[in-house]
Amino acid sequence: MKKSFKKMVAALMAVALLAACTPANETATTGGGETASGDNVIKIGVFEPVTGENGGGGFQEVLGVRYANEQKKTVTLDGKEYTIELVEVDNKSDKTEAVGAASSLVSQGVSIVLGSYGSGVSIAAGPTFEEAKIPAIAISATNPQVTQGNEYYFRTCFIDPFQGEVMATYAIENGAKNAALITQLGDDYSSGLGNFFKKGFEEKGGTLVAEEQFQTNQTDFRAILTNIKAANPDVIFAPSSIATAPLLLQQARELGIEAQIMAGDTWENQTIIENAGESAEGVAISTFFDEGDTSNPQAAEFVKGFKEFVKGNDEYVTKNGGEGVAAVSALAFDAYNAAYAAIEKAGTTDSAAIAEALKTVEMSGVTGDLKFDENGDAIKSMAYIKKIEGGQFIFDKTVELQ
Image (cartoon, rainbow, N blue to C red; front, side, top):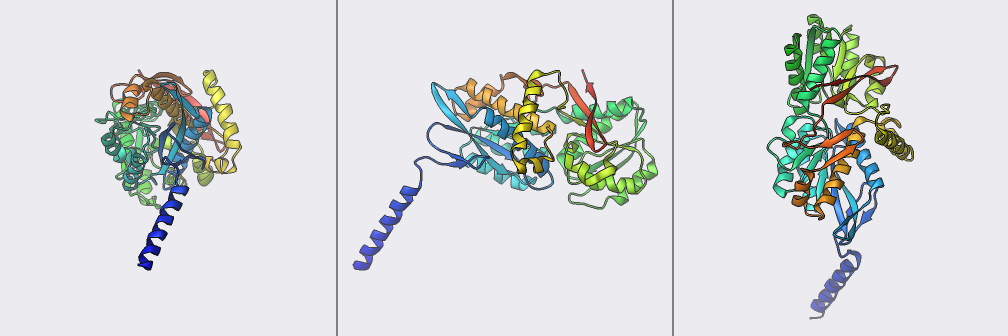
């Protein structure tokens, strides 16, 4: 009897201690390590890779979101002020991990999601967000499949059919007649963008003289590069991950390949230049934004503020590859503001209502005017081309398609 009484007392004390240590409402961690709780909190999920082969680009998108959150930390809904809380998850650049990360955001009660860097993880997570009726805004996921057939997925970037044609146009305009293509087997972004480049290049009169693929996590590309060298192309289009790029570049130059190497938006990352060294010289990429473009006052203000934001944190400077403004950071800033506008329009924390409001959002962003078409894709007509010169990304030209 005494033992039973002691056990009951111990159990009651444990419950009391737990109640004393647990807040009345669920608490989640924000990107800055702070916490917020209470009824007047709205959660925005940040679905990004900060590890894995796309971790560098993913973190640059996280920075853009965190900076936007610094500017707009609260929103007023139906007369009440709500604190906006970022709930960040790492999808680890992996399709399987992406599904678990997406489910985690759903279970934590986010009202809208931003991300991801990487089309494959976005495609994998799409059904999870759709089933939960939570809208997601991809920031730089360019594969058309991200939004197709999913009314809850949107994006702020241009898509691969456009980007592939832009790079094909650029190659032809620069005198290329023959091209080689290198893509990553099983990677939605790489294979998709590669196919669109091939289609655009051939339609414009060019000839594809070599087409090679490599496996995920492959580090030795000499065999496929030897085949390409024998074909003697004018240009090589090699859309791939940040981690893969330096190895491809170094090995190509070591084999004596002199053709210009081109890629898509993922290669706009300073770590590629740092790791590839002189082998990166002359590379051309397509991207979404140029910090040196002064035609948009809103963009100029963003660039100044973002640089100060990054400079104030040593970890940010290191992971960002310096104090420069990556295009994906600018896109992430716009994505946050699009989400903010949709939340304001909906006037509620209800995710389905926010999704409906997002369809009608029209705004002026730092990467240009933004509104969504019937698929949830941003309507874009222009891309920036940058070249690597003197160890820096230098603006070359814009390419506009009608």
